[in-house]
Length: 415
Ligand code: HEM
Image (tube, rainbow, N blue to C red):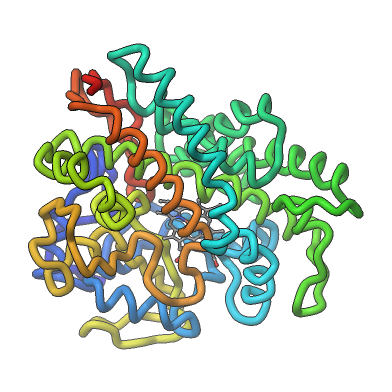
């Protein structure tokens, strides 16, 4: 397999200092369906860089399946069987699993949490702002999303610190600072049957089991109660594996993604004081500006698919079994869809970004929840600040999966 460019998106050096927007632009222009070699035992992957091509891939799960898993790690049949969640299921079973959970994630369902979110936001910002100078990630964005998830799962407040730690250990699998075992290390082999090859996943399963035991047969309406007490619409019971993997998915999916969106948005507002000023003068624009926050943050670079047959796509021959990676972050900067795509414009309209995917069966289940969290956070934050300054280096997660900020020292000047 050859690429017309020499850029490999498997090379994590490209991602050590945030998103490689220029590389994405070059690939969109010169090699929009390109091949990256990977180190053994991985076999390389196709990257889909352009918005419209990405939409085609997402909407064609029969050709581009999620069933062979959705990050770059290649898994065998035994691992698939043990690790499969909603995210890695297609077809009728996917629809049944999604139906089980979706009632808790509609805009109306998540609107019930607005008062709780306002309280949580106010406390988070009170404590951070009292410090004057602080690490924005640690003090504001890191714990906020998981505290919301804890509410949806109805877990005791004192357990949220533990949930945060598990989330960090699992999702930072490429980053030595976070992971206990790096995903491609020989030591991680022992944990090959658990998500992210992470021992933390086993702890999350055990914790989920405890909650499930306590709620089985009761009439709670939290996510765990819904999972253990509802009938499946396809008549196939939720297995222990289904419960474990989907519980873990819920813990992970809304954690890092929302955290990094909040951190990136703070960074973007610092770097674009004119846009901050627009929102300070017109706070009614914030609900709409959230879409630009999401487009510009692109906290998940991609979720991969696998070709189920040989297929010609974008002038390239993709073979059955090849990994195919739609780069949402690249699609979000595609000038075929977005006017001046590299401008952070909080009044941008329309704004059909692909931060949650775009169409297709796996479109983010938590998108309404993420949107309300981000809106409430910035409605409060923007109303209190005069300006925010960066006081040191921003430290990025070294990953081509999650576009994350680990540390961002700031000084806040209040109104
Ligand atoms: C800004 C925050 C978020 C971003 C950027 C994000 C992004 C995404 C994306 C791109 C997908 C599609 C995966 C694919 O195509 O294979 C997805 C799926 C999913 N997300 Fe989110 N997400 C966010 C927040 C959340 C939250 C708060 C939750 C709630 C727990 C959540 C739960 C899920 C679930 C369960 C799926 C799997 C859906 C399925 O396979 O049918 N996400 N997310």
